[in-house]
Structure formats: C-alpha cells, structure tokens
Length: 471
View (spheres, rainbow, N blue to C red):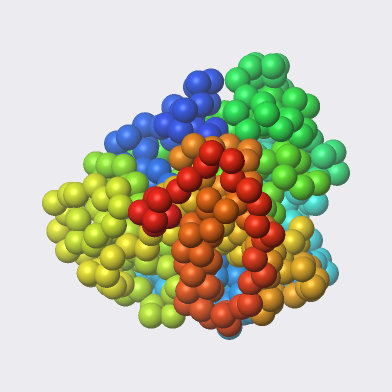
C-alpha cells in the first residue's frame, strides 16, 4: 500500500458519446484502453453531464457546483468567478502541485490566453481558453504561464498528451493533480467538421452507426467517420499516458479519471450538436482506475458530472466541502449506501465522504441553456424535460415558469424516438417526474417553478401502472 498521497490525472475529452466505447456496445474497437480501464477499475455505467454545453459543464467539474451556482450558464457570457474554489485550490491546500494542459473555456474572450486570475488556481499552465479558435488539427497553439505562445508539434491529441507526459515526468517526486483537457472529439468550429488524424476517417466512414443516428440522420453520415477516428486517437493517447505512468513507477499510486463534458447528437435534436435533454447529448463515458477504484466493478447508479469532484477529493483522503452539490461515489463501491443497481463491495471506509448513509439519488438533474432554457431529470427508466417559453436561453440562467416538453420511456425506447408527453396513459409518470424535477431544482438552489402541463392526448393501447411510474 503506497504511503504517499495518490497522484490524480483527469483525462477530459470534449463532446464524446458514451456509445463510442466498446463497453457501451460500440463494435468498432475504438476504445480498447478505456474498455480495459473500465473493466479493471471502476466503470460508471450511467454517467451524465449536468449541463450539455462546454463552459457550464467545465465550471461544474472544476467546482462540484451546478452551473446556476457557478454563474457560467452559457459559453462566453462571463468568466468563472475567480473567488470560486476549484479542485486546484483544494489539492494545492493539501500539498499537491497542480497543472492544467489544453482547453480551458472558462475565461473571458478578450484574449486567446487566460489571465492568471482566471486560471482557477492552477500552478503549471499550458492552455488556451477556446482551443478550437487558437489551434487546428495539426497546429496546436497554447499559452504558457507567462502568456507566451507555445506551438506544440504533431496532431493536437498527441501534442497535448506529450505535454502531459512531460509534466508527469517532471513532477514524479511530489504528489500532483493534473487536468488534461482535449478538444477532441469536438468539431473544429471554422470547418464544421470532425478532422481525425490522416487516414483515420477512411477506417470508419460507412461503418457502424448508433441506432438514434441511423433513425434520425442529422449530419452523422457526413461526420461520423471523422468523429470515430478522433475517439480512436484519444484512446491511443490514454494508453500512452498510462504506459508513461507505469514506466515511471507511478501507475499504482495514480488515480486516473476519464470523462467528457457532454455528448454529441449530430444535429438530430436541434441545429447544433448538444444543448438538449437527450441521451445523445448528456450521457458520457466515465471510468476511474488507481487507488480505491482498482477492481471497483461496474456502478449502475446514475452518476452526474457534479459528483466527480467530491469523488476525487474523497479518494485522496481530503474532506469534501459542504458547499459541493455532488456526492462522492466511494460509498457505492463499499456498499454503504442504498440505491438501484448497487454493486456491493468490501471497500474500507474512506475519510471525507459526504452523506455516506443517505440513499443514492434515483435520478440525475440536468440544466440546459443556449438552444433552450430547460431542465430535465432522468431515472433508470424515465426521462422528463421542461422548457421556459418566455425567457432568453442565452441571457437568462433560470426561470420560474416552464412548460412540459419531453417524456421518454428509456426501457422501450432507448433512442428516444417517441415523445410520450401528454399521453393519458402517462399522466401519473409525468406527475412523479415533475415532482422529482421540482425537488431537484430546489435542492440545486433554484426556486420551485410553475410548470404548464402538455395537452392531453389519447394513448391507444398504452397503459402504465403506478409502480412503473416510480422506476
């Protein structure tokens, strides 16, 4: 058992669908490294973003707060409040050295670099605020701690991975917290395309397509080959980073978290790629390895992006700040909380866990902005969303008035092709989900809203029992 505090590396991708991974059914062998990490470590099978937009999601992962608390509810509106405590602050206070490499997207937009006061407390810095604007596929331009331009060689994923390996090598004598943030597999904005490394698009164009994209189309036929190629290169980069940790003797004492800010629906749900309540927008691949996460198994409870900051602190023996709105998943690994899909384990108690004995929530809560001002809850079976009809989705963070928008039965309709909102047969389901949503909004610091009900429609043969409504 290592005596020194565990190192932590966050491997953070941008706009990656959960079904890009083999452990989620993708047959193209894109992610053998992630799959192995999920199978040998801890796989969060049902992991979701709490805000399917880049900057808001990033603010949530840095702070453990919902976007309405961080103030970053849209891209580029305002930089994250420099007075907010981030993971970097908590790890630095515990004696860690901290580093950030890659895309930040939490600063102002006055300069391509990020001023010191907007860097979230990270010490080592090699990043750009909007990496998609300062770089291209084979031109990775970042800025160092003195705001000097640094151009890294190679395909952008490889360039960032090389920088991360150099950081790990240079800091192996002290505990470190490294946040490695990629742009891929996000589209390259000025091209509206998903450019993989040379030769990778051809491997995957015209091959397997997820069922929702096969049904709805969008831009998938144009973009999916490149997107899969980007996911493949990211997985190869993950393997290189894990190999580097192993070669330096750090693998056993380093916690690695793989996750993404949101997913990608390829213009099937709105005119862009995310910003909706659908699985293709909010469900993300997430796994951890190292430390208490080795042989942790598959966690079937629903886990939110906002749960990951307290999880990392808890895993390193650090206290979870009471203001954090997420919860550590470690009690799920040792079976000390109840909840659907629990995988019992024999893990020892870890210090700093928050509300260990409380039941794990049966739903995740999602705030949505930009394309719409919306809110959603998702349980094991049901998805329910509302939209604010009289608010500016870019300028308003919240509303006290919403209208029902979507209700999906994920058991019979996992691709969310049939909206059940308003059906007579599903009025009890909608009522239960509406109550869940209002409760979660209040818990997140919002006011209880008025929700207009959808017009009632005939149900045909459909019926739902009261017990089913609670699933």
